[in-house]
Length: 260
Ligand SMILES: NC(=O)c1ccc[n+]([C@@H]2O[C@H](COP(=O)([O-])OP(=O)(O)OC[C@H]3O[C@@H](n4cnc5c(N)ncnc54)[C@H](OP(=O)(O)O)[C@@H]3O)[C@@H](O)[C@H]2O)c1
Image (spheres, rainbow, N blue to C red):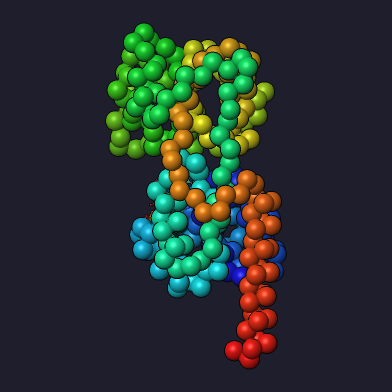
């Protein structure tokens, strides 16, 4: 059964690991191409956009894809909207890995905002020492708040975009555990952290560390994201794929009984 997995996340990598070597499936993992040197996936992969919903629909037809899993990041709303449209246009079943958002716990000092621009404004007028963990593409929003000192953690540094003047980088790739995050935040002497509400375990360590240190977190809440059938984990995605496979098998059985 030929599969397309829209990836770029720890969940997509975990699903790829579950699929690797499973002869029932022929998966392809699709990456947008945002990071310069992505970790090599354990299954066949392709890199780059499809050219909108039409392009994705054409890919599904050309490659005879029988099921699609959207395992993209909760903040990647455009590709998910395209996946829903392309699934409707082609009839290819679509399931979406939707990791739950982080919920505020006792001791969390969160300031919830709807966008990176609102996060920059929420830092206030007085100079603060800010740990930015929002991803490279959101950094230009903080050029509007040049009074702060920033340390940004990124996989790749941004190029040719406006940035705040007092900005240092930490180049790293998750997952990050709470102990290491605690050390980093203590050593950095940060006053405040800025994070997306990404959900999942891979980057939750910074939220736990901020709670332990009593630091405020400016948290960018998620955009509305269209989805196919919602699944909570890579294991659930495997179970859904097995159901799709069984359904195809029984259709094939009916067809052969009828002599079609
Ligand atoms: N946004 C985040 O905070 C974040 C964080 C971690 C990882 N990521 C990953 O980084 C990728 C890009 O994120 P984004 O926020 O820029 O997405 P986006 O705004 O939803 O997508 C923009 C365009 O990038 C292409 N694209 C996105 N994901 C793709 C994929 N998996 N395979 C092929 N093409 C893809 C599509 O181009 P076409 O229209 O040409 O097909 C899409 O229209 C996603 O795959 C996401 O899982 C994003």
